[in-house]
Image 1 (cartoon, rainbow, N blue to C red):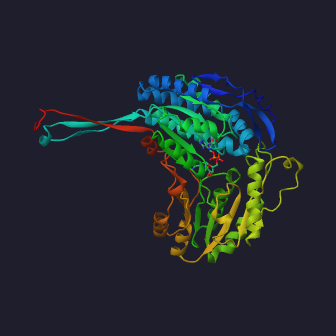
Image 2: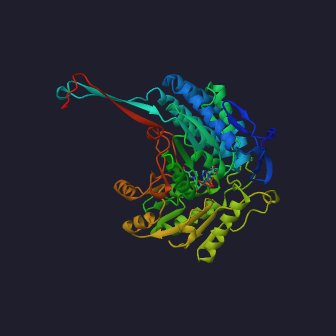
Image 3: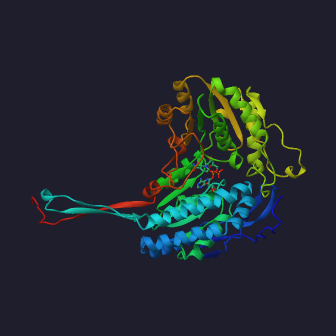
Length: 497
Ligand code: NAD
């Protein structure tokens, strides 16, 4: 049953600029809805040009203070913020569940912790960031050069709605560790928890202006991507949005990191541990109601085990508990919006119309409590073919397409036959085959004998149209800093003039 503790009462939410809430000038607001009921949670003020300008000014002032601090001092604040996030885990998880529709069982164990882990990891790295020193030897008069790793300045983060707090942390933590300031715009469908992160940062001692939040739709995002005093933009969103963001960023040659969509393959060879492979297929498709960019939605199973795999997969999918996201027993919550639910249902209908066999997922449990929310029962399709829309396009919902194969070369070619390249997984007990196949897959984030695990230490990102740059790990440091080379002459200047 849902926790009996009272739910938060939310007043109108605003931008957070320079360490405090900022009223917007024109009074425009939008509503954020609870996906489980489609009732409004609160009003949110839209940030327009004036608010974005104020955020840039505040971020420039914050940057001056923050970038002058040493890495140890910066890291201490990020680690304190990690501790505060963990201490407020329950409160933040409830808010995330109300705003996103994901099960509280996930929000409490994954979302807040992943954000806190990220702050802790980059808090630890902050003191270690530096350049190198290279002696050039006698032929250069014993001159040398050194490099300095310097921040970029004011960075913009633009988030998607599936992991709102986690995305805010995954962008802010490496940016701030490198000494940058950030202006973050959460997705308009999930505007709430980024503001909590701002409060947490303030409590942790972050100087005002180093982390700011603006609110709104694509237009607010465009004010950021077009701003010539913003040095970098990191977007998590759809491929089409990524292209627009990159084009806008080109006008002022901003750095870009793009974390975009996918249609990733999960390949199961006949020698795989069947139960583990089925567990991974479930994780790869139905966690967060299927609203995960890296999901392995094309499940290729080698012919000899396909029927056994399907039987276990369908049985375990049917047993999943769909319901109120705040109920700790719920495993499948509500999709983000009624519009998105309808899009996912349309894909399911298109799959049936194209001749794929819907093994489960047609109907919701007969529970009146589900009637008002954006629920879709997890769907498993058999008898899929590679050209069907359910196999080709990102659905971003709980829809799994099962495909069968007989030859390694064939499955690698089919797995790679997509413009996306975010993730991929391989299940086999054959060590050499596992590494051989992974090396041939065109994807930036891969798993062998598991799926969708994203420790903060591991770089995350896509090949091809799934993105540019990397989040997490040491790799993200490259994307939030710039390298200055300094040559130091130890002799005379030799000049032919
Ligand atoms: P979206 O592209 O519609 O929106 C993402 C963000 O961009 C929102 O904050 C939105 O307001 C903003 N935006 C939209 N148009 C813009 C523009 N022209 N200029 C600037 N900002 C703009 O994506 P979504 O529906 O919020 O999220 C779902 C998508 O995100 C899926 O495709 C999913 O695969 C992808 N995603 C990728 C990752 C990853 O790490 N690769 C993670 C989560 C989600």
